[in-house]
Image (cartoon, rainbow, N blue to C red; front, side, top):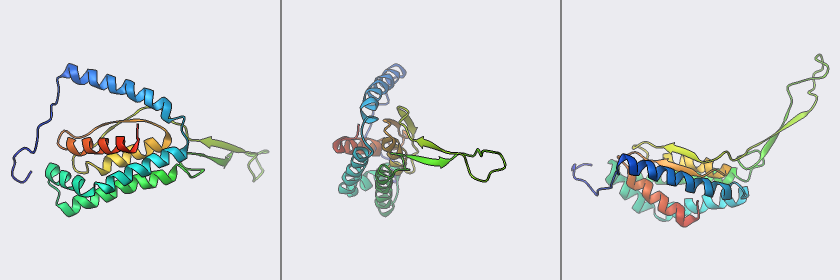
Length: 186
């Protein structure tokens, strides 16, 4: 960005080819969703930890790519890589908490019997359930951290994701996808 010269070129596709690609990716994500939602919180947490590890192992390359792509100073890009990986660590831990993304919660009902009583008449069990494929649009100014901040909780809950990165910073998203695949993330 400092010189104004392109660092590479990426095809944007035609409206028809892009629409077809979106439908194909949604179909694939639906198939993967059925598999992912059936896994345990421990398994999903392991996927997130592995992805965070791959990101940290490639910290310098990711930061350099971000610096070329969006013009951040290298120290700030290095900080964003760690910041982004920390979201995955957090949601990996949430998978294991009984009241986190992988579990549920017992709560007292707001109803009392009789109405003058001070104690609730029972409890309600709430649980978290995977709902489907999630779609995310991310900004150019935090191309790595906003992806992990959004995709992390989706995976923790058992949902698959499709990410549409900013057209200004697609390379960071593409690199994250490669690392996610290496980590086993569907």
